[in-house]
Length: 379
Image (cartoon, rainbow, N blue to C red; front, side, top):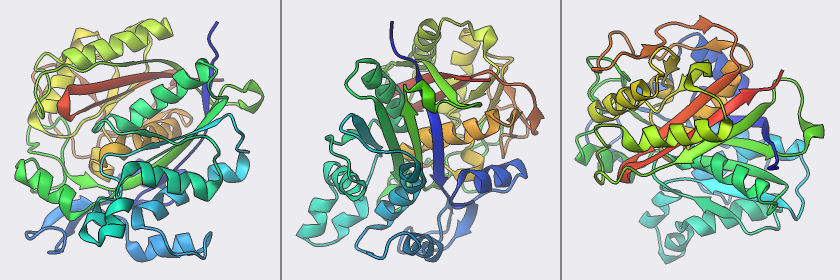
């Protein structure tokens, strides 16, 4: 019999706050971190994005660490992990998993020394060394499903008895590289993004870090802990940047998670979707959800609050979903006004108070990757 795995601690660092409670209060009241920016060092033309104030970040970091020899992203990751490591002991059976898509990409602008620090393995080892992990760090980088996939990987490694618990951190930052890349795709919205809305026209980018602690030790499981029930990750092998029009990879990922969890789609109380506000992604998700009978489940996207935070998005949105689920609320999908996909789905256009037991998190990304994880709130 496989071990049960639980998420017992969470944290996040975003433009809306440096802890879970402040982020929840902001999204519950409808406040967004997306702002209008004019910064030619990042992009020649003005743009909308969700960016953490560097002064606030440095001040928060200085409160826990006097050594400032860390990149901006490293500071964000350390701040996200710090509260978890204050409460949990690292052992030689503790996994450390880092999820990102671009990591310290801005280091490539520097000297040869800094170019070496842009390697993702180096980033993971630096964070692991800071906290004193003795196991080899694990890097998960699979486009925008990375954060969700990290949870699935941690669960499977614990169940295989390779580890007893796992500390996960996910993060990406806004950079010239990221902005110019999405801008070259003509994928960036000229206004704050509007997931699933008929007037949506592209993504808004953002930056954040998030962290969770996963354990199989039931003595650490308190009321409102979150059990990881099942997962699936299927590539639809359609196109380097375009998803399957039938949602095949996402459909199969969710079906796999349902099968492992041994529950039906009708039992799901809430669905935290990817919802990038691009024409093809949102349509593909609506098709996949309908194929699985999920069209009546309350659905939201957090992208209207935080933008698309790339490799951090999945884990950040799991953290936010847990905050909502433990409070029995589905927050509104900010930016949504009128349905803009061909299939009927139940987008939350206002905060919904409801009892939530089972919830689903999905993510999809470039290269056709898809991941779904099912969770249960423990009473």
